[in-house]
Amino acid sequence: MRRPRNYWADFANVERELLAFIAEHGSPGVMPTARELADAGHGTLVEAITQHGGYFAVAARLNLDGKRVYHSPVYWQDFANVERELRDFLAERGTPTMMPTEHAFHSAGRDDLLHGLWLNGGSRAVAERLGLSLADSSKPDTYWQ
Image (cartoon, rainbow, N blue to C red; front, side, top):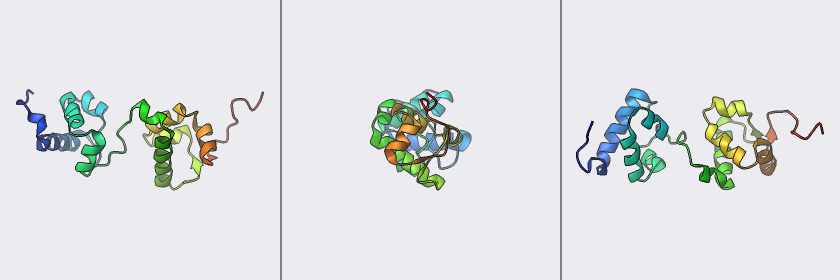
């Protein structure tokens, strides 16, 4: 559907359409990802969200949970971001001192965080750097050599 000129400049339009999308396709109170919006044919809404400060800004403004919003690889290359996201994830799970398995990240829908771990040397390296114990008791790649 064609929108009038400057339609997306009015945040009320972004709010209305985003909340309608969430009601129809999403989870109440949860900010959808750019991929979810684009896959559903709402590419212009993705652009509008960017114009209004990005996903986290719009999620905060609408009091939506934005944790599912995926970050760029540049974000994950900064170890401080990985540490903050990981510690939040661990606190939510009630395991603040144990590095979860890859399966646990997948099950929680946090492939983005898992990717951040890979960019910073992998789960084992990040766990060692942060003093976390490993839930996965497998041996390091070079153990048997």
